[in-house]
Length: 84
Image (cartoon, rainbow, N blue to C red):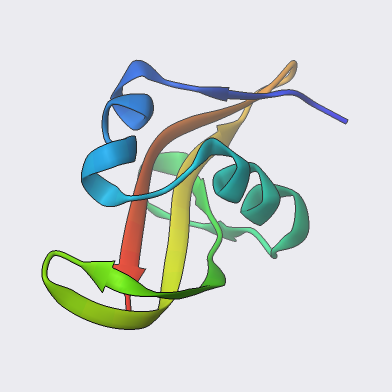
């Protein structure tokens, strides 16, 4: 199993976008991958949330990492989160 590495850019958005590295790793390891622009890959995973985010209550948080599958590691470039 390849290690998952996070770029400085991705780690810099953890608090602002509200994801954890564990959520991203779980998404990459358990969800189907799809090709995205610029030769990168993505996947999506929904997590129960049931809390407030930016002053509004949401029940689901979706984590969407953008990453590349390199020979020795999976490198996470950025992570998007969506709240429903």
